[in-house]
Image (cartoon, rainbow, N blue to C red; front, side, top):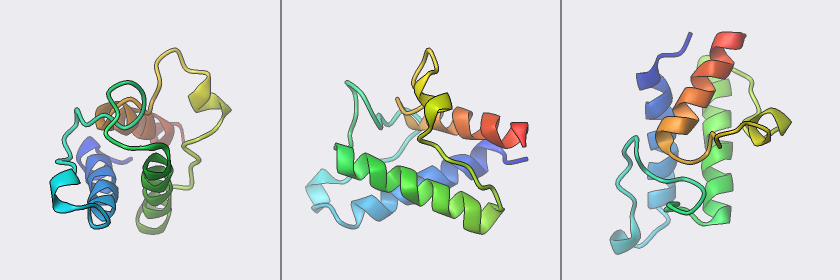
Length: 99
């Protein structure tokens, strides 16, 4: 089982990797409320895909969790799991608990 702290750390690291490619003034301060996708997003679509890919890869390599974060299950939920770091964290821990 993955704790919320571990999952948040993985997401924050993916955002920090993205920050390394951004101008200093455009860097994102990652918090659980950081918008990832939708009206309050701080990421453009390519950056969003990059963060999701980094998170999936890290979860697989470092924690042995093979999951796909962009699938029909995620898309069909009443609330998007991509809205913020917190919603993505909760979705990931839910998937991990199902395994």
